[in-house]
Length: 118
Length: 115
Image 1 (tube, rainbow over the protein chains, first blue to last red):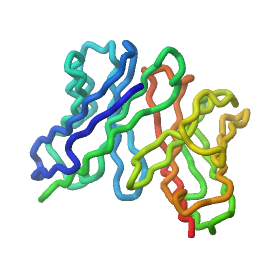
Image 2 (tube, each protein chain N blue to C red):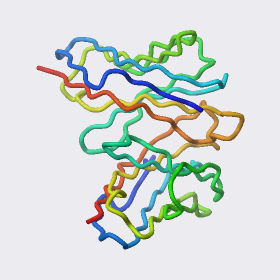
Image 3 (cartoon, each protein chain N blue to C red):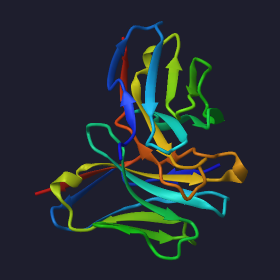
Image 4 (cartoon, one colour):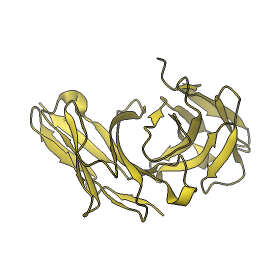
């Protein structure tokens, strides 16, 4: 079984500063993918960044980067130069093959509410 | 390229009724999965379809069902609605059968309220 843990229910950051949102995962699979999504109050789930378990380089997408530490089973999201529009709920998720039984299933953490102050 | 489209966006139903939600994936995507999001339980996996076949199912009662059509559009149905079914229902679209290294894109969700 796969499990995602996000230990920060809420985080606050000053505009233009960087912030790190924590995510640890648990799986026995060797092949898996890690995702981060942003969910504003409107409810839509916006894809931010993806990291594959065999990727040697940390993923980056604009202001988002994923600090992937495989041995520690952590996949923290770093947002640089925070903007007011970054205020939202952030979810870490994982998809693992689980011997071919999990297919498209994503397992989500409980989320972190990020508030950006002006 | 159009994104994932879910209809309707909002629904209000009465306890005991049934409801059908629709999801049109990104063109060319053949995998559609559904999730229920509630404040208490978070995001929970309902089921996943690929090429009209249900490949995986979450731990939900039989009142929750789904299907996928040949054009990859998917519907989910909830019969005999209960107050606890009030939630945001999200569908995700992926380009393959769910191998780990494929991105999943979500629709805007359908917010169901059962009264």
